[in-house]
Every structure is written in C-alpha cells, then in structure tokens.
Image (tube, rainbow, N blue to C red; front, side, top):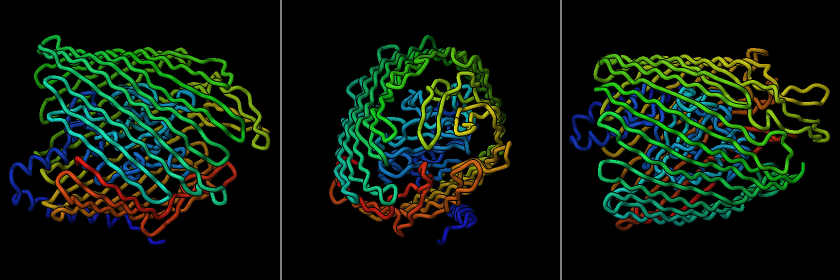
Amino acid sequence: MNKPHPSRGLAFALAALPLAVQAQGDASTTANDAASETLNPLVVTATLAPRTADQSLASVTVLDEADLRRQDPKDITDLLRAQPGVDVISSGGFGKNTSVYLRGTSSNSTVMMVDGIRLRSATTGSPAWQFLEPRLFERVEVVRGPRGSLYGADAVGGVVQLFTPEGDREPTPRISLGGGSFDTRRASASLSGSEGDTRYAFSASQFSTDGYEVVEGEGDKGYDNTTGFMRLSHTFAGGAELGVLGLRARGNTEFVGGNTDYVQQVAGIYGELPVSERWTSRVTLSEARDESDNVDDFGDSVIDTRTLTARWENTLAFGRHELVAGAEYSEDKVSASTDFSETNRNNVAVFSQALLDFSPVTVQAALRHDDNEAFGEELTGSLALGYALDRVHTLRASYGTAFRAPTFNDLYWPFQDFGSFGTYEGNPDLEAETSTSTEIGVRAQYRRFFWDLAAYQTNIEDMISSTTVNGDTTPSNVDRARIRGVEFGAGVELVSWDLGVAMTYMDPENRETGNQLKRRSTKSLRMDADRVLGDWTLGGSVIAQNHRYDDENNEDRLAGYATLNLRAGWQFAPLWTARLILEDVFDRQYSTALTSADEPYLSPGRAAFLSVNFGE
C-alpha cells in the first residue's frame, strides 16, 4: 500500500507560505479580518479565559462550524483523527467502542467536556466518544498537554471540549436529511436565535444504520442514536446572566457477542455575575450520566454512572493581567448489577491561575489541590512562558504536572471468572498515576496563514497496568512511561481555498520493558483541502498512520494505512445545499485494535453518503 510521506506534508505547508503572504495584499481588509479569526481563533479551554491561539501558550487545534459542515462526519472522532498529537482507536465503525489518545496517553487520560461539563464513565474512566452526534456541535477545541491544574484528574494528555450553539440574532432554522452505504439514515433539525436579551438553541437528530461486519464472519453490527439538545440563557440589566442547558443521547449498538442500550446525558445551570468592573463570578451546577444496559456472552449487566459537580469560578482583571480562582466539588455515583464494594466517592478541589502580560513576555501559572476520598490528595501545577519574537512569531515553553485517577473498575471490580480468559479483580490499594510534562514550541501567525511547531516529553509514574499471575489478573501501579513527540500544524486561507496539514511523530515507550505502548501509532499525517467554485464546494482529506501494536509485548502488529476521503457540496437554491461524501475512496480496509481472540476490528471501507440541507 502506498502511503504519503510526512515530508511531503511539510513541503506542502512551506510551499503555501508565499501564496498566503501574497494573498494578504490581494484581499480586502474585511476578508483578512475574517481569515484572522479563523486561523487565529479565540480559545477558552486552554486558560479558562478567552485567548487567541497564539496567546494561549498551548498547542491547540480548533475545528469550527465550517469544518463540521464541510466534512459532515458520522462520528465526532472523524474530525479528530490524525490531528496534531491525536490518535483514534476504534473497535469498528458506527457506535462501536472508540478511544481518543492525546500525545500518547490513554483514553482515560484525556478529558472530554461538553460546554464546560465533563462527560465520562466513572467505571471505565473513558468518554463514550462514539455516541456523540457531530451535527449538534458548532465548535471543537483540542488542547494538548497537561491541564490538571485547571481541570483536575485525567487531564494528562489534554482536553477536548465540544461546544453547542448559544443562539444569536435572527431565528436560524436548519434541517438535514441524508443516507447512504450500509442502509444508513440520518435526520436532524435545529432552531437557534435570540429575542431581546434571551438566547436560545434547540436541536434534535436521529441516526441509524444496519452496519457492517466489524469482525470477519460475525455478521453486520447495527447502531442507532437519537439525540436532543436545548440551551436557554438570559442577560439581565447590569450584566448578570443565567442559563440552562441539556443534552441527551440514547440508542442501541450491536457488537460481537451482544448489544448495549446506552444513554449519554449532560445537564447544567449556571449564573454569572459582574460583581464589579474587575471581578466576574460564575457558579455552575451540573450532572453527567453514562448509562448502559448490556447483553453480552460474558453475562448481562447494567452499569449506570452519574457525576454531580458544583464549580465556582472567579475572574479578576488588573489592566492587562488576569487572575482566575475557584473551587469545585464533585461526586461520582455508580448503580450497577455488578456488586461493587464502593458505589460513590467525592472530590474537593481549589484552583487558581495567573495570566500575566508583560509584553513581549507573557506568563501563565496555575495551581490546583484535589482531595479525593478514594485515593487521597494530589497537587498539580503548571507554568508557561511566552515571548513575542516579533508581530508574527511567538516562542513558548511550559512545564506541567497531572494525574490520572484510578477508576471504579480499577479499584472495586469484584472477583469474576471469565473462563478461558482467566479471572479479574480490582485493587482498592491503587494510587493515582502521576506525570510531568515539558514542552517548547513556536507559532507563526499571519493574517491568512499560520504554522505551529512543538516538541514535548511526558514522564508517567505509577502507571496502572493489569498484571496477570497464573491466570489471575489485577491492576497495579507497576509501570513507567516516557512519551516524546514532535507536532506540526499549518493552515492557509486563500480567496477560494482552505488548506491544512497536520503531522505527528511520537515515541511512546514503556520504561519497564523498552517496548512501544500498545495501540499507539508513532507517525501520522493529515492533509485537508477545500475549494469554493461558485455554487460548488469541493474538498478532500488524506489521513495516514504507520503501524502499531495491540499488545504490551509488541508481538501483535497492526499495519499502517492511508485513506482518501472526498466531498462535494452544491448550493442549488438559496439556503438549500446538497452534499456528497465519499469515504475511504480506495477501500483501504484497516484495523487499529484486535478482539480478545486476536481478530482485527475492521474499518467500514469504501462508503458514500448523500444529504440535503436547509439553512446552511
């Protein structure tokens, strides 16, 4: 199989530089400003405060509404795949178990948030990425590197935050109907806007597919998803704001050996008050649910987890400087047919962050203390320094600590005999994994072009690994890991072109054995290109990754792959668009994970999807 070489992606990015610079002089000021907002967007996840990408002093990737609409993904992870520092591992397509690794850390070490509310399973520790309907979101922020000092447990590799529409200006309706390969059907509708000082957004979607053979010879595995979302907010005289939001996804997914009825839900209410000209205070109360009713060859089960969180956040402005300080209380609850010895735990945290601007030098320092009743206290911190070399180039360096909390499965899973697969039992004496990370990077930010280069190293101590002795398996703090990597990203907006490239090189090593960490690819390349031709838009994406291993001993090797996706859109009437998506055009079937019987989980292969959309 022929795969694009990473050096070609670098040449592509560098070749685009003179074109981008020339385009600055040819385009209008308004167009330049719009491009600047797209290529140097505001980011809130990195610092809890709005900062442009170059001011955030972090490695960030922002996927905006235009990216979501153009690529029209069936799964939110299709957008994330092979972005700088991002690896996606899946047990098949369409609603099957999916993990997102940031900078070589596990899915348990990646925090996923929806509008500031964390969503994950307290028993597995991982978010259910596969159940999130992408058409309900208008923005994705990926922040790579430790963020434990801001978000607490599990933000070792970074944070991915999904944003829903807030509603603004005139009422904006949207309707989409589509379908395609594998008898896939999808429908969605939304309405957003504002009336006076009240903003609103409502949306609903339904997705279903007969699926395909995710494991050869096991028959098609279907999936369906129904999601609803609402958001309301009102700004009062004096600037106070009150808002509520809720998102609920439910459906069924079939897998080898059974099926799962699932629910993913977030709900929250927030109030924000400008106490004074310099002090803004915000309180958020939220609940997140991950529920599953499983029919499995190993035995049927019901596992429901719920996380309740109260967060108080204060922002104080002192000229060009800002101070963020607050406190957070959260409680995890488990209700399951499995007899866990403990079914709830709470965590109390306080945190602070200083954002200091001594132009051309900027400083960001953060500190957080967590006290968890299950595994004790953890102190995390970070320090980032930035230096503006000129109006275009910003140099940054950072150091940060983080930790991954042991899950309920790690701690409390009861003794269970899985027959020929042996036994498993949790370990209540586990401690949290801890990590230290250093990074140095530089970003060049033109009006219509940017590039970002970063190198980093993460050291992880007390890694939680499953140890097997005479067929008996239990988790323990035995491993150490060192992950080194280099990331490069670039983008350019010309008059009718949007071009982007992402490259990653990584060395994820288990320091106890010298082996490569399982399921991590070490090299990846992504190139995206889209062009407007009158009423038409044409585009495509090339995604390539090298081999990986599915086991700790590096014996089960999964081959690398390269895929080409094509897309076309046609605005055939005002507010009406038809869109065609061709995925994996050359039918390069590949696998990123094996079953417990060492059979590969297969990708869908070549597929086509057609949709008709109103309101875009």
